[in-house]
Image (cartoon, rainbow, N blue to C red; front, side, top):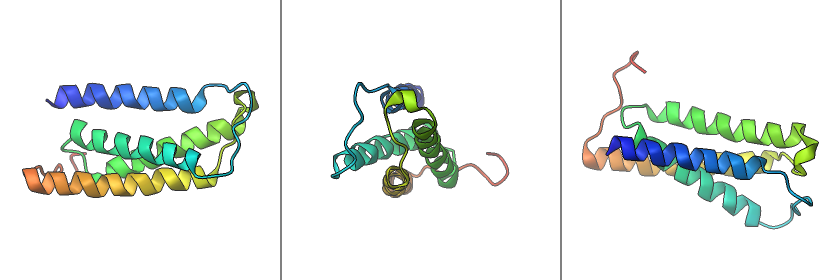
Length: 123
């Protein structure tokens, strides 16, 4: 089952990064919460899938990976004007908030199903 979750996680990660870095014909308006909801759905999903795909990884390792992924996407959007996108600290904050909620869900699932993180020093 772990292999399936790993496949789903990596497919979702590739999809999310591709969508985030796909050049737009015109810039997306930044007003409203629509964009933030997309970020939150993507990062919640990625976090939960990461927790299922890597059941022995520590939650803080998953959190760090998701936060760095969100930062990398925002920096790329900011640094590459040909994408017609704007990197945003608020988008990164939405990514982080969704990651936090996802970690709570993963932690609860691990506790319910008895999964334990790796021993200290092994991850």
